Length: 335
Image 1 (cartoon, rainbow, N blue to C red):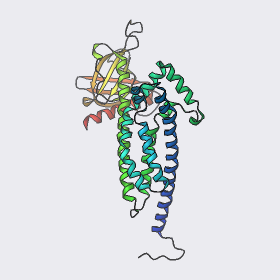
Image 2: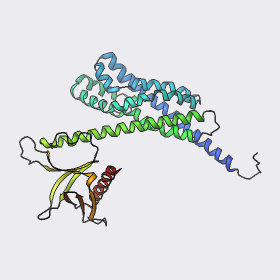
Image 3: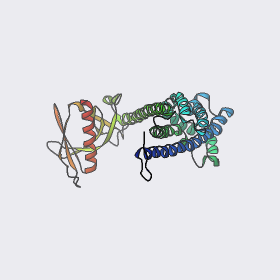
Image 4: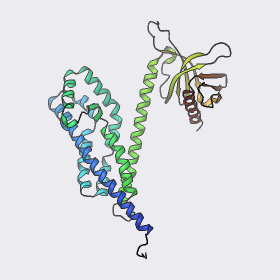
């Protein structure tokens, strides 16, 4: 039994009051942002999807590639909002979690969506004119379709932040605590899966770009299945003679050294020829100099079973970034 004395603050009551204030603030933000989110989903569904369906400006496969599960996501928001407006947070969010797979599907299609948009804007004159006309509507406030397409993925991150905060600031004995805790866990898991999908898509883009920069028979399939970390020019310091500039591409498992093709090369100007692949699992890395952060650059030593590589940069910050990336790649191969 709790005994309260006049004028004496009770820590338990103060904690409960803080929880209630944070819960009320989070709940209000979730409601207000959901209204705005649903409004934007509806604008795209009405002025883009609906009219495109009616006019036939885009064929169904292209329309599906562009908008994916947009209408179903809009429907899920329409289901959720009345529960939020009625203060039934747990019940509403528990029901909303049944639709989370739509966000996985949307994320998996996001790269295809942007590609489809750019292709259709480039080659489909009618679609290009239609998009410009719709974007000029005052309802969109100057936003373009390409700005609106990532909206569900941005909202998923907001859902995670807000629902986790709502669950954390709901008292354990509250009727909806269990529902909110479960919803927060499911939304966080979905957000993590979506983040992983996005990382893989970005990596695939890097791999395609790097593969396009490499030419010659040895370059075929060099980037397949790898994870890209960084690229840039470094000076290779030989035992004798002057340092030679080379382009390096670092992946989690290998360091690729490439030499630029001659500018006047008939077919492969602007590309690079692969000169060597160095396995990170066999690399021993050290800084020869360049620890102080001064303006004179530095030198890295990379030792492999049959070769030693000295890499130099006149940019100290750039060399430090390379050192940290190489260290991470080496450690990833040992785990």
